[in-house]
Length: 192
Picture 1 (cartoon, rainbow, N blue to C red):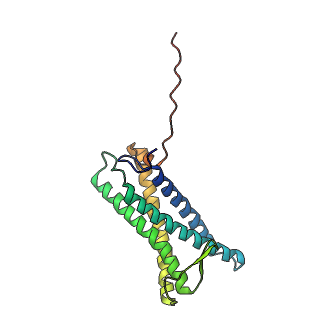
Picture 2: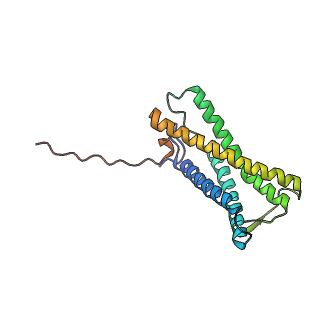
Picture 3: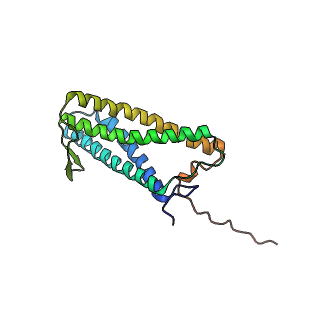
């Protein structure tokens, strides 16, 4: 089994990282949107702690995904893809990576500037990456929140483009990010 990406297909490591990040973003979005309205109880504190731990995990996975992409390369565009679509796809990927770094880092900055401790799944503490500052905390939370909504928009556009290619263009844009299913040959019926 080839782990690296080929010229026409994403490899299994890229696929695993891609779909793990998608699942983690979905979970974090749900957790982040629901935790703010929770009553001030220990459950809310635990929800915030989980959100932070998941954010740190996301940051690590995105860094790993980017490093893997630089190492393993990326498939070439599907044959017949117009240059303007290639450019939009490239710009979208860059914007997704920027946001996937900016959102968890802005959360970390907010946490640090607010003076809160930061733990990863209650296993170890992480250092503050900024000094206490109300102004910095206010800026960081804005970057965190607006970045999330921009990320959501880009993810919808990204998925929409993949489905457009799959349903209307009939090309392999979507299929090459999905595991290849082995097809069993059809049974041949004996001729009479």
